[in-house]
Length: 318
Ligand code: SER
Image 1 (cartoon, rainbow, N blue to C red):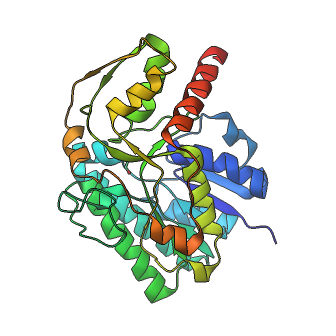
Image 2: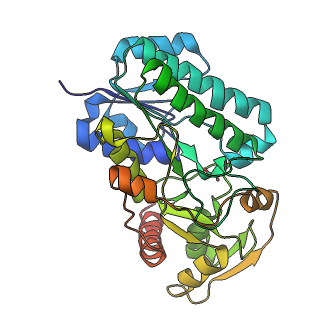
């Protein structure tokens, strides 16, 4: 029997690209996309789409009862910068939303659930270079606190109720098909659009702010690979560290300048700088490599070429 996959928060940066990939794997009719807002991207017209607020338990029950999903990707969350502006709402959405979806997964016998964690689980007391899988976790952003509590609950639901939860700690994600919203790492997407548009960019993080990043293709592949891995390969039920590429805005700008020599970046750090300063600069992902064979494909050179080519093609076609 073909799985029915439910993607919650499908219209976001990860969801849009994940749904596109899942449609190819399972067939569009078997991929149910859902989000609190109406879908705009054309891929959502290929398969079923449901409006779903993860704080609305009645609606969750309706959607689960209607489709009886076997695999669920629960991506709905408020990202770091927006969460700092609305901490109570962020807690509610990221925590209560997760409980509601986990409980529905148990009630409707979902076989597997993917839940995204983040490098935001780390905090200012964490070792920042090659941050290990198991280390000090004292996040000081509300987003990080919800991700850390969420990880603990992933482990708890697995241990106590046998829920087959899989999770990775996403670094900053860089893709050309969708835009991020409200994150601290969003500059690394915006910079490509501005470089092509005006050969200039005002960056909200300082030039030396190194952060772990990843091309969206790698991130979606990691998401699919961990969810497809045999149960006995998933030894951690909290979030796995995964690493792609680490760089700072100055290094990224230099790499872009190899293709757009006149590109100029100015720096106006804002409140997101404090968030970035509390996160790791690079990640040790040896546990994910050993457990489920994680391996990134994009380095900075390849990432920049891919982004410039594709953002440029999208700009000329619209
Ligand atoms: N990219 C996210 C953010 O910046 C981190 O998980 O909030």
